[in-house]
Amino acid sequence: MDSSIILTYAIPFFLLLILIEFSYGVIKGKNNYRLNDALTSLSLGLISRFVPLLGLGFQYVVYKYVAEYYNLKLLNLEDVWVWIFAFILYDICYYWMHRIHHEVKVFWATHVVHHHGEDFNLATALRQTSSGFLWKWVFFLPMFIIGVPPEVYVSVAGVNLVYQFWVHTEHVGRLGFLEYILITPSNHRVHHAQNDDYLDANYGGVFILWDRIFGTFIDERKDLKPVYGTVKPLKSFNPFWANIEVFYQMFLDSYRTKNLNDKFYVWFSPPGWRPEDVKVKYPLRKNDLNSFEKYDPQISNRQKIFGFFQFAMINALTVIMLFNMNKFAYTEMLSVAALVITLAISNSFMLDGKTYASKVEVLRLIGVLAFLYFGFFTSFTYLILAHSIIALAVIIFLLKPDNYELAS
Image 1: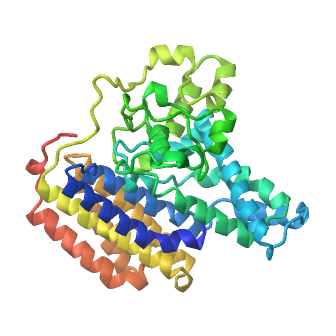
Image 2 (image 1 turned 90 degrees about the vertical axis):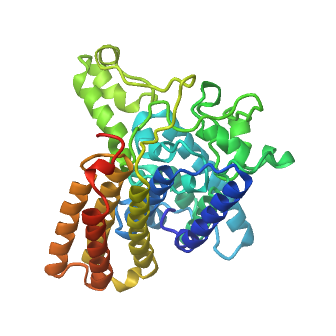
Image 3 (image 1 turned 45 degrees about the vertical axis):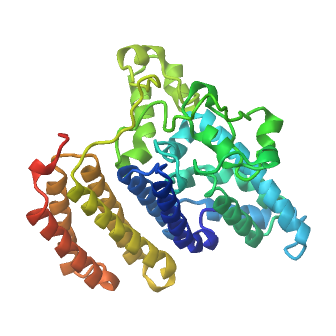
């Protein structure tokens, strides 16, 4: 599903629409973009594309096996109704996948990344997990069992996910009768809200019908503005930490609790549940919506410009790789993925206002130059070399530790 070529070709249009939404917000005096939050969302989305690119996980092997040996062969690729049926069935499967990812902690651990963003805009739509491949695929096995052709499955999955992009906006109000049928910006704002009255609702991908049928629909209220983000705030722009934070907390809680049953249950409990002995001894900070403030470390304008420059490199490398994947050896794709991830992590230290950010970036750049010297990144030598030289010059001559307004 996440490997659909439709998603790859949609990326340039996504970026264009994000720019249009940002411009519209500025012109109307309703801008809801912050550089740090937006760059983190976009970086997480680009990093997630390396998962299907590198063939991580075993979903494709399982799908192929089920399609070959347990396929009831009830559907035909050439029948138009099969495409329509598959589109609807995919959305039903998506509903249950999405709902369970909100109701069971070990599943929530792979989905929470999408909800960390404390702004709600089109960039938020691209804030995607890199660990969804672990078990998201299980929920779509029924489609292969009844015989949905692989070409149909990949196509409807791609269309479903592309549809979900546009509903991540605050600039579109209620849409009349469509609110009863489709996922819209209004009912999806509720889904991303951390308000108590809005939690755990509106899980559909394209259709809101399933939420209405299965009792998980909550309507957006005029008197209750959604507050976005997670109840337990991440307080970081680090993409690596965003992907492992809940896993890390589960490991700690399972290790710390004295109750043997709780050591197991913590993995399959609701996301907010923790063992009583652990909760008392190791309390976690949760948001108080009465005094809630978005995580927004203050950094200098030079650092913001440098952060955008770093993101531009992340974007360039990823897009070039995605549109030319057949031209690269697996080892080079792996090397580029490592470069993109480490660049995004290093950039997050800058966005987080850490005093050691420049030192980390210098060490990273020295490592990159060493890899270039030993023949890695053969297809990107000049691009990576130029970026590394410029980045080093900026850090040495323009960015200094005393420019940081927030200590680590």
